[in-house]
Length: 318
Ligand code: ADP
Image (cartoon, rainbow, N blue to C red; front, side, top):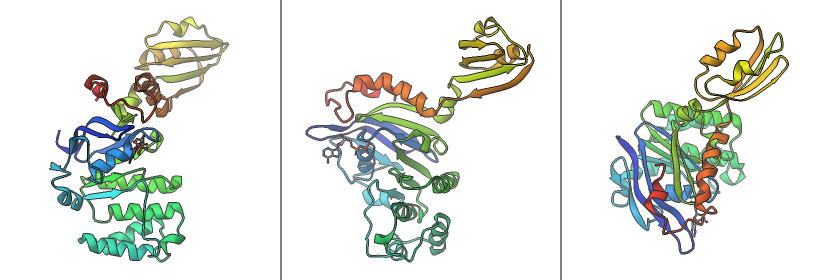
């Protein structure tokens, strides 16, 4: 894989807690990659290690093929970063701060900054200290995107944004990704990532549990089907069909769950007169959490990862 971000055995241990435990991760160029886990899972630690704001206990990380420790300056030139806990100069206005940061970076188009501010509806002339959390977050996002970086690393980017602005943000991510940028973004809520990410990695207690394509998660998802027929039907009409389980028939209403292809179900249904049919996908969150709980059980409480975990445990699903 032509990786934009690659970590090998990346580990950060504190005296009482292994915040990140042997992370092996590859994010392809041009990919939008979601990083999900509950609070305390190790998301920010990973991101801070990638930014070389923290030093690993062991292991290494590369961005665009450059070691983040030895080539930190070169990496940062090509990177956009949004911190999880934003600290901005409170006295400056949004415009002053962005102009200042743009000068530090160089190569930032004024028109692009203005366009981004306009798109997010950021009041540029107000002092930062007077801005709401959401408006501060917009300043953070604009400074991350304004130099059109090749790689964007965004820690909880949609926190504080209302749903409309989340959509604006998702559109922006899709645009820069189409132009070839790689985006890694973290969240503790999968639904915030499902419309924007190609793949999602899930971590818990410092360990990588799974990396999945959103598409695959959706495809493998069981569907809850409910059919209302014009006349009563028999449970046996559906019970034996491939992939069908949990058949519940009450008069003309049939409900069941379908795993895999729907072909046999559609044909069986079509033998009767149909009034209405719905096929509902479960929430992605639910699907992920199912696997999560099964595997997380070995991991102990969040943040309590044992430093002596074996590589099999660590990398089971990588
Ligand atoms: P997330 O971003 O997923 O919420 P973090 O990466 O912030 O999680 O934290 C992972 C774990 O490491 C947590 O248990 C946290 O308490 C611990 N941790 C983070 N920073 C430090 C630190 N400087 N000293 C000790 N423990 C820390």
